[in-house]
Amino acid sequence: MTNQTVRHDGLAAVREQVAAAEKAAGRPAGSVRLIAVSKTFDADGIRPVIAAGQRVFGENRVQEAQGKWPALKAETPDIELHLIGPLQSNKARDAVALFDAIHTVDRDKIARAIAAEIARAGRSPRLLVQVNTGAEPQKAGVLPEGTDAFVERCRSVHGLAIDGLMCIPPAEEKPGPHFALLEKIAAEAGVEKLSMGMSGDYEIAVGFGATSVRVGSAIFGARDYG
Image 1 (tube, rainbow, N blue to C red):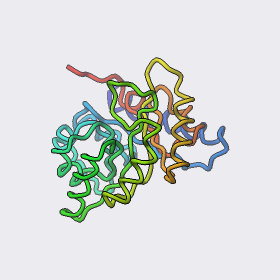
Image 2 (cartoon, rainbow, N blue to C red; image 1 turned 60 degrees about the vertical axis):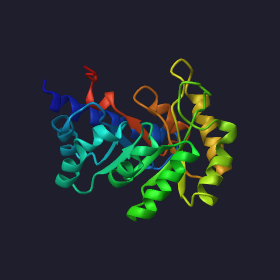
Image 3 (tube, one colour; image 1 turned 90 degrees about the vertical axis):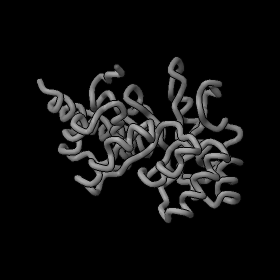
Image 4 (cartoon, rainbow, N blue to C red; image 1 turned 120 degrees about the horizontal axis):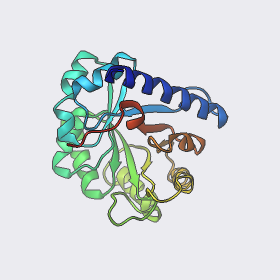
């Protein structure tokens, strides 16, 4: 079986499972967006997924994305590209230029840098705030108790429109409570979009109100990190 067949089959299976999870949760069909996470895969590894009809993709690193996505987006102009990994302020210009959504706004320095680039370039990616629901010291994200205030600063101080929140639950904990917490914080902060759920738990996330799920290995197969 070729990699192209594996990726096509993986995408079809994930789409079916998302649809089933929407139905089980009593949510309208199509209410959850599938972000195919293509980090570590080159353009030739991504094209079969594009050919199968997928148009929303996620990348973790700005520099890696710059090496493959300008050409892919030129080939397929309706592709939507999301940054789902950490953003350094010195990469804000490149991120605003390339990505259609940034899920990892998590500190004032980044918010200021993004605001400056939006003003300079006249291009406004959709923005989500990353929340560190597990308060893990090694993980990026605003702490839950500080999220409401940070979202408000993004709006009132930095002039940014914040569309939603994103989280990555601790690997060793059940994800449900973290998804429930993110849903609660989003309601308090007055945002609607919830980016949560990955290959191992996206069906659970749908049940807790995810509006987008970030799925990589279930679509692309095992990653080769060299």
